[in-house]
Length: 317
Image (cartoon, rainbow, N blue to C red; front, side, top):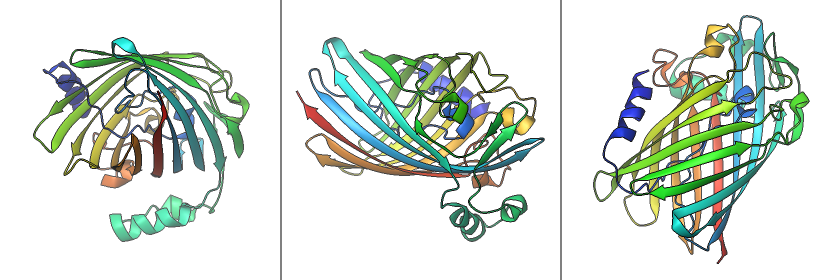
């Protein structure tokens, strides 16, 4: 809880205008993706301006706990539209396209564990490559699937030193394929930022998600808390190097400790401002494997490894 408490204390501290240049990513565990989670808004469009973005994330996970097994890879393509309005408001709508499959990262992750992190996972090493299965007493049983996920709309407003927001998730994804939950979710959130120096900033956010009742998954929480913070290094006017931590409650209460534990990840990202309101960013995310499971407060439950790219550009005024 130390990291979660730190994120909360940061939001209570005196803040400057919320620049929010964190990576707009979330925990891509397949079960978590069925429910809404707040992602940092980033620099919003000015009043009267529209922006669009497309983000690709590839997340690979392997998890055995009790009678539960999650061994798959998820490709998520997020299409987002934003509009800046008068009075510090901005509106956003997102439609995700999802594909759960065997993927290509199994061998890469085995190498990463051994060559970079200096250890290996015997259970993962013994598992078949390219498997796509999610099953368990609280999960049901799912194999490969692809299609539209749950769309969402959100609005946010700059209020002095804060950015406050709310979101609604719509059940547009096929819950039978674990492409959505089958229910509506509601979310409220707050963001803030602190300029530490000319080149460094510290940014944080917190959110509460009221989870609607799923139609296939079982034992869903009524709500989930989120928090996150990160450091942004801005060596010049175009480059942004980002290191961030994020927490969220598990979507379900399965009764299996590793699955119900807080979901915490560490993300490292880079953003390049291309001019004309355009930007491109790349990132990768690690779960508990980053610390070999020895520091769950730092990183815990999530995909073993996730990588992503995102491009954003204006649509005009």
